[in-house]
Amino acid sequence: MSIQQTDKQYVANTYNRFPVEIVSGKGSVVKDINGKEYIDMGSGIGVTSFGICDEIWQKAVTEQISKVQHMSNLYYTQPCALLAKMLCEKTGMKKVFFSNSGTESNECAIKIARKYAQDKKGKEYSIIVTLKNSFHGRTLTTLAATGQEHYHELFTPLTPGFVHAEANNFEELKAVCEENKTAGIMLECIQGEGGVVPLNAEFIKAVYEYTKENDIVLIIDEVQTGNGRTGKLYAYMNYDIQPDVVTTAKGLAGGLPLGATLLSEKVENVLGFGDHGSTFGGNPVSCAAALSILERIDDALLSEVNAKSEYIFNEFKNAEGVESVSGMGLMVGIKTVKPAGEIVKACIENGVLCLTAKDKVRLLPALNIPESDLKKAIEIIKQALK
Ligand SMILES: *Cc1c(COP(=O)(O)O)cnc(C)c1O
Image (cartoon, rainbow, N blue to C red):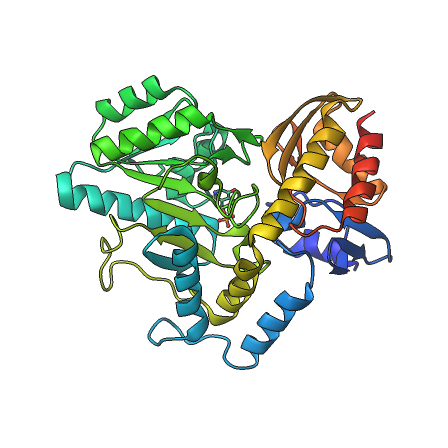
């Protein structure tokens, strides 16, 4: 039986995979079982921040894995402590809770918002307001947070206490917050799965001011937008705001599972001993990987991200078969004339892997994608757009 057949028979049917079996890779190029090469414009959905088997990342991982791979959270380990320190120093946040995924980083944020509000304002303050068209994860609670009905239908009842407001409509959001006993507001600065849709800067700023005035916990979901993806370390840094909680995962550890919930001074002590936990959270190998990634997301790297971003936007803005281009940094959505799925298939034929988000082609290349690979991939995508 081929691997594709074995997978189809034994792996749960939740993924409609492309008929491609990847066996290895280096940087932004991956190779399939037949030796065919592809330029990777999706980086595992924004995960392999510095590409496949990047040497610095690989060294950090193998060094840690040959010392100790896991110890549980009953004991101290160096990578966990140093990563928390680095995240705080780079953001001004005060503490970090580590988990294993984006969805878990959001679960922790929701727990914190509720506990903060309930301690301070009363037991009935439990409502979390999120935006329509958002995506916050797949657990029953983060599905409830996700503002897209079609994700909800199959799994009711979801966790109660979530209300969705229109994006970019501050008056409506304010009304929703006032109608409810609101504990927190959670949003993505750029809605990723929702189709690479950036929120208006004025809206984000207004929400920020409102949460400050009303002592509501502001949670920014940076699972996809974080770790250099938008040309700043975190996307919120594009808007002159200071969130109460920032959640991140995807690109944080460059390809190993790690989620982080960053806590500002306001909420740093909301959770106490035993209030929350994770067996794998803060795993030393994942944290060593993340240290090596974060260390490299400096001003030089970010200006490289911004230069490549400008190049990509310019290339697609007026290209044949393109209706519009959205996003920021190396998080790009292309609204195409042809169906996005068709373009992705044609790109696979011609040696490029890209993603979709709603009706758009989505590009999330490695932050350090070599210019030659980027150029080649863009030519192939442009050809498919026509
Ligand atoms: C991917 C994503 C999540 C979920 O992350 P997982 O690691 O798949 O649990 C949550 N929020 C946003 C914005 C995401 O893009």
